[in-house]
Image (cartoon, rainbow, N blue to C red; front, side):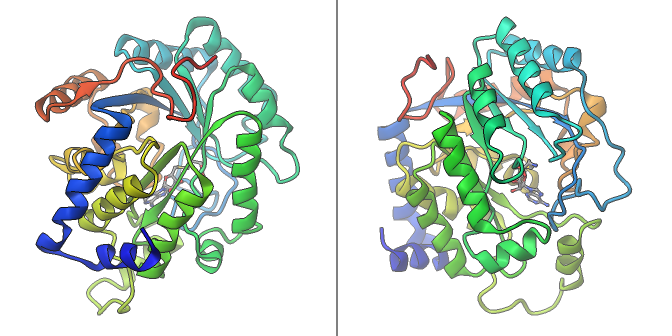
Length: 354
Ligand code: SAH
């Protein structure tokens, strides 16, 4: 699909979208099947030295109580995910090499490997450029996948989102290095950040295809009042938006999920938690029937979850893990899908992680 066609679907409404929804679901079924893979998310630390202008745990938010889980607590979450039958663990955190030294991460991966054959995904942000040894060490210790969203394909907007970052090219370079280190790579963008145009979003979808990603996550931008971008967004509410501004709503997110499935037929695409936050009853289901095939339930201990507030109201979704797990599996079966078994690798990797 070319740029113009992507743009026209992004701008479409109502029945004009029916062909997009139908094709995305058919392409999903033909390429990744009916199984929905569950990935247990462990928010290992909220300590962060980055200044991402959208993120609630950015270094300059003084109202965040900072934590790092102990190895024992992490292993406890791993066991919980095993009990639920989740084939993958996702370790996510803020970005502070000093708080999460390379060797500590290696030790955590090794300790998990001793008790688990689950796939291990890391989502620990970027390490300093030109120092990619850590990525190789973590792959060697037994981690299988790495997630870093590039957030936007527009270099100028990227700078606005990441004032202390050397730039989009460096982010893309990290993704390439991660692939070279042997990881499956995942990335994605937020939908509707202030300043994002329809053209930018169409370019984002094209960039997913160019990067040949194994996993692609997209979710609505949720304004956090203790961040610069959240404040900018909230201050503009009630005013007429810029004519080309992408809205941070469910429909736009679903269109992007569907277009992503068409652009990247074999990739794993989650129904994201951010989407479920803006539509608690139908958000997951709507994404799963429009191209998505993955969900990432949270298995972080309750006492830490509420401190990992990258966007507001995230914490209030912290239903007890058991309850959430049961409801999720019922929801999956009720839409005629099955619960994925095994690691749920992307099509390019064999089902067996070895
Ligand atoms: N520090 C890690 C993990 C970040 S959290 C990293 O940067 O990779 C994972 C994702 O949550 C981010 O990549 C971003 O796309 C999303 N996110 C953060 N703040 C958000 C917000 N306010 N609204 C919506 N999504 C947000």
